[in-house]
Image 1 (tube, rainbow, N blue to C red):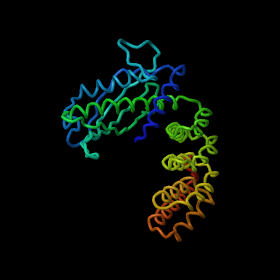
Image 2: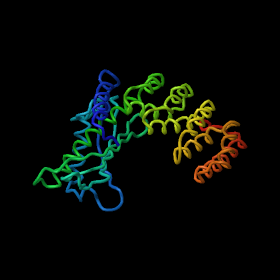
Image 3: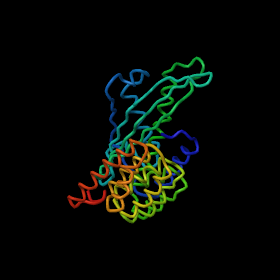
Image 4: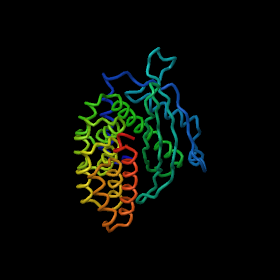
Length: 296
């Protein structure tokens, strides 16, 4: 969820730049409206399914990298199906006023067999004195849908790049691009990405550093064990437990020695238990001849 105005502007600029002159646009042939269990958020703010669908379609149509055709798209076009859901909507006191806050999820499923891409974005609009709450909610939904579509365009462009370009994007000045690159490389499990992902363990954005740990665990390269262990010595709490599990997923002699130490000597019982569980699983995989996250 992104709140910094500069980051949002960066997403819009990069999404536009990444799609112009690049791969052909994703042709959105339809959008479905999803609703979770419980009371309808749409009903609470007075917006119907058709209106939310139109907002999502318009967001795709206005975003470089997507296209909403007026007629049947040409043969060979990359067709995509979208979906939208309003996951939260509430009025929140802010200073002397009130603002309408929403949490919107926008998804797109490329028709070329690629994985579904999703973006959950939180947005807010201040109520103007005398304005109905429903009007502020609509403005919040409109702006949030536009931001989500722009984020998806950037994610789609990243997913369509070759590995070498994605690895270069790990050094991008834009945190959203680095984050997307980590996710793509985790899915592809290319060992060539390991040095770049190891560098991201020191990323100034702690979320990206955490995801880099997960990506290295998915690749399962033993080169990552030492740097993850070193990083764990400078962190506390749940992040250490995540690194313990990652080391266990990679496996090997160095990993098991570290897990032995953590399981018996770490002062946090949650971390110690995570180490015991990871050690047990690592030994089971070793006995079955499956060492490392990349081989499972």
